[in-house]
Image 1 (cartoon, helix red, strand yellow):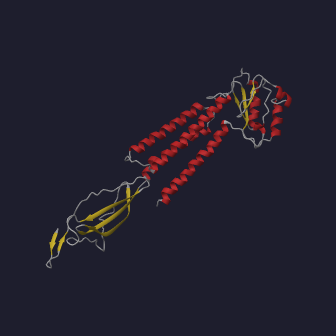
Image 2: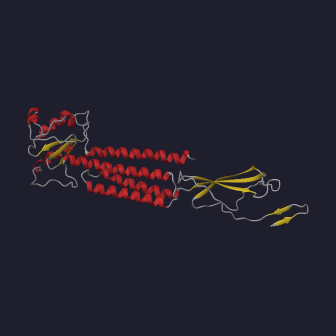
Length: 336
């Protein structure tokens, strides 16, 4: 609309629809804030011919509140600058808009499924260490689900050459999953080294040479020992050496018929020692338990598959919790 007043003033008013570019920085995605700029400047005439000024009362007005599916307009500002060119000075009007991403969608679609996948993978810590097949199936399935989810997230984002915040989250979650599988590999190696049977928790048959000692095994378990049946005998170690005094354990074992005397223990050449993760009771001499301080000494703790599970059950959630505290505190409070 063009209006010409009697005093020579010309009032020109018309509507323009603009689509302006905005440089996006996704380093803190999906908790990012984007700053967009709108620049108004004369192309052909300097400020001797064309002067640009923001209205002092309301430089920017919005007909209705701006609603975007992914962003919220948090603030805006206007400023006038004068630029010097070889042909004179030009007025330039700058409008700055700050948008904050709405991350609720990503919490439901990315972070919550990641939590669930990690928690499911930790169920293996509560399973019998000998159930290697079941634990491996659970861990590998969770790991594949995590990598598939990571690929889906990357597919729906623009390709950039730097790592985003969601990438840090997914990579650390994959590391936790890998650590869970590595712990399973350690347990499998320990079971293989000790000769314990894996994949089954069934009791020995009545015609087995170990069937006569089932009651003694149950008594040892009640006291606090772990007793596993292997092809070569019984693997026995103290589950909690700090709570079972050496003297009580020795007297109990002697009463059960497992230990005789120090001389007999030293002279029994048919019984073998099973590394340093347990003690072996050979089927050829089931009344023998090889004397070793690692089983009874209060200053030592034997590493068993159960203990590895307990350490992993404490360490991995603690590491993941520490990462969560730092991650969410940084993105929700420090960045804001």
